Length: 120
Image (cartoon, rainbow, N blue to C red):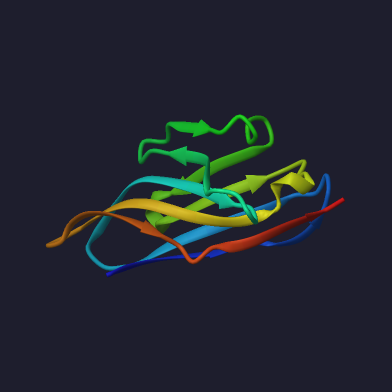
């Protein structure tokens, strides 16, 4: 089994910064694409940013120029550096990963989510 555990959320004032982390734990697995999603109250979950194993990235328009996604493959860890935060960035942020688990094949995994609250 593989688990994704996020950390780094919290309360920050508008204009501030936060760095989210997501670490995969388990054994005999290989992580492919990783991504951050978010879900605000009353809204659908949306993609924030995605990064391939090779480092290619894609961002939602709302994240471009403010957020940076990165990963450390040796540590099985995904990051999201969020700068110039706005109140509309307030949401639960989820880590997502496509993981090949030896003996079980490929599956999509979600973390438990971490709350980000931006005050005005």
